[in-house]
Length: 431
Picture (cartoon, rainbow, N blue to C red):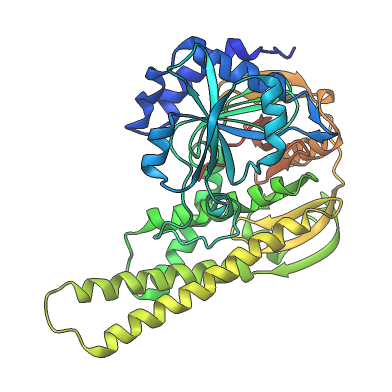
């Protein structure tokens, strides 16, 4: 049976996961926020999600910080109200339609002049952080693109009965439909990560073969690989129509695209452009680092080395722009009824795929962490047709990972482990 939780009961959970999921030195930031303040932020925000303003759904992002602290790091990007407004549900409902949560946040602080919280103004965070997160800006793993959100306590509310608590771009926990969802880092650890890492190892070998020397930068390769898959899922989530992304071993691309009769694929393809572009970008990155080492040896550097540095940089810029376009392309395929089928080396096998395999599966394990070793068991009838299709397919093979993107914005992962189908209810898509 599902356990529902009220926002005021989230306080110990927020403190617990903040210390785990927020990096140093910001992991101590919540120590300065009292339980009374935290309760007010959560409860007022939660109640505001059930209201509409002139038939418009209320959505907003709050940043809890003093005016001075924000302005010290974001000079010129704030609007200060001459008279702070009370932090109340009615005030949020009136103010939220004037903000676009992807770029404008509402500043909340504890005013010296009175008890309780007040809204002191608006913070224009810009859209570059959102564009970077969702794949609209290049995926370069060695450069930082996009101005990040200020690293303060952030509460976002986009759906009725739903909250997301974060520190800047670091998600702490989500409340969706009255249920607490703890983001699982399945793309960075656990069995799904291990499944994907076998493909990363093969890409690593390809790069070594092409470069003619062993590279030690497999960490950068892993980061870029996971980042690309994350951006596809983020873009699918943004489209708000739901969908399924199936990831299968690349060797299946040369055999039966129906995965042994498990799928009926309406639109069959064999597009490997993303894989080639990622490989080219990483090979160029290795060459760029090699050229940089030549420049730092302290000896005279031939002019042709400088010319090649700029040439490599220009080629990578073009490739990375094409990769961003492919993120949008892949996410767009999910708008067609059925699943998008992708290999673990980013070859598109088809879309509009329907699960044809039958299963006598009756229960699914709900993972409590990224490993799936801690779990609870519930009947599959608790979920809809899209989730049940993913359950049936993963029940038929341990070599398939299904990502289910719900219309409400949640992203779940499904994989078979030792004969049992495991569901991760909230995939952590932090970059």
